Length: 153
Image (cartoon, rainbow, N blue to C red; front, side, top):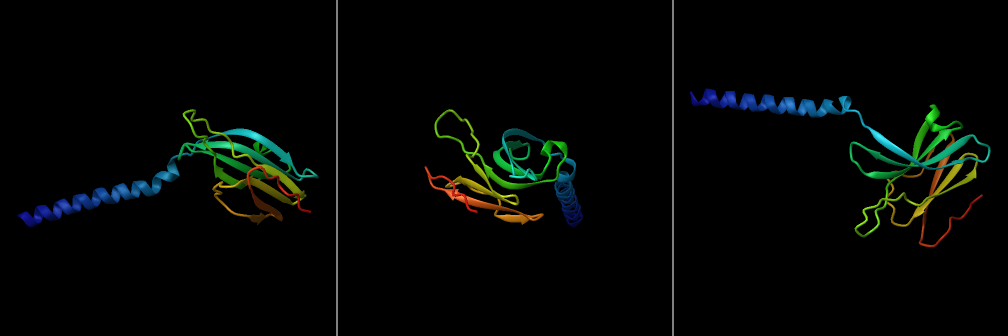
């Protein structure tokens, strides 16, 4: 009799575990990620073929304030232009009791029509690296305090 109850108990626990694991695996497909975005600046390429748009973003999945640069072709990102993330980093929080977040202070410099240089303060933890997409290249430059970005031709 004990053996039967043990098998039933193990079966019930295994079923509960399988349902829990299955729910955890499919939940991301049903939960929508909600983000709030605040524009900081938009800089067009020399001929206007591309736009680099710096925004502050906070999303429901992690509630971290991030500084993001989106690159889009020609038209505004908000009007449905194809876009991709060129820079992403957690925004800085000043020390002290204020608890105020501020954007990462970036310099967006167009080196030419298809190359954007993003300069950022030393110590910024980037969430991706340099890349080329659709014939467009993004370069990164870490700045030391008080330094200015170098414009390379």
